[in-house]
Amino acid sequence: MRSFFRVINSIFFVAAFLAAAFCAYEVYSVVNFPKADYEAQIAEIKSETEETREKTIAARKDFEDEIAYLRENIRNLGDEGVALADRIEELEAQVDTKTERLAKMQKQAELFDDMPDAVETARKEYGLKIRELEEKIQNGETDVRICYWTLDDGPTYITKNFLDALDEMGEHVHVTFFTANQANDSPDEEEMLRREMTSGHSVQNHSYAHVTLASGSVYVSVESFKEQIMLQDEWLYEVTGFHPTIFRFPGGSAWGRDLLPGAVDAIKELGYEWVDWNCNLYDAGATENLPSSGLEITRALTQIPEEPIAMILGHDWNTNTLIAMKSAIPQLMEQGYVFLPLFPESVTMGMIATR
Ligand SMILES: [Zn+2]
Image (cartoon, rainbow, N blue to C red; front, side):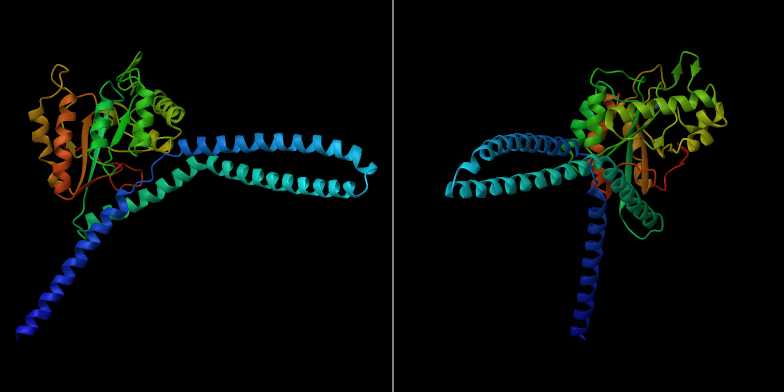
């Protein structure tokens, strides 16, 4: 009887171990995000190619000079003439090898030129992988939890502090920046956008002018609304080399859809998805434009564990949000949350704010 219990015990032990290992693998397979860190590699391979090209041109010139000299003299010489003829062949073979090497390097350089496309493809595959995990979470097939921490209105003077804090939390903590060109100007905004991108965060579209336009608002007409999205799209592409794919309505979709009934169709026509949130940090300073207190944010953060797929609305111009984020992320990680960048493949697309 005792050995029977021992067998049962071992079976439970092995099952528990396998479940834990599977869970760890699931997390591992999504936190290794394909980063857009190809710029340095492209620069390196290009300079190597250029160096080889210059060396080959110099070698070819040396070869041609020498061959011209040899051809002039070879006919007047006996045995020495034969030796010189051998030398010519040797030099010709050397040039062939170098030409071949150059062609190979040029081909390699072309491959690196295509790298942004390769990163795009990797991102799409990654997005589909996350979607699979999201569906498992929705079906109760895993204990893994996902948190999409979104930060709107940047880049700002303190975006750098947010990025530093995220770096300190490790290379697997990612957030999503919904950026707007004119919401908060800061002198290093383009550098910050590139840093967001190369750190593996998701860089998305929150319109170019944000809410205020000379003519009134982003929601004046379908045409101006589309123009706002495309202006931001072009700016982000110019700065980072990537087109955003997700839009967040300035002020939230309830307001945007109300003011402009054709807004959702317009977004779809531009090939975009859109998303609100299910956890609001109330850090946009509704009261007299002052940043919300840290207490309000802390209170809002208690909503997260109710959501197995949490979508947090925060702003990277609020220092209280920065303070709250620094303490909340490690705590939520202990509760099983992984912090992923947002992709258009996510099941959350079209999520309407409930709070
Ligand atoms: Zn905003």
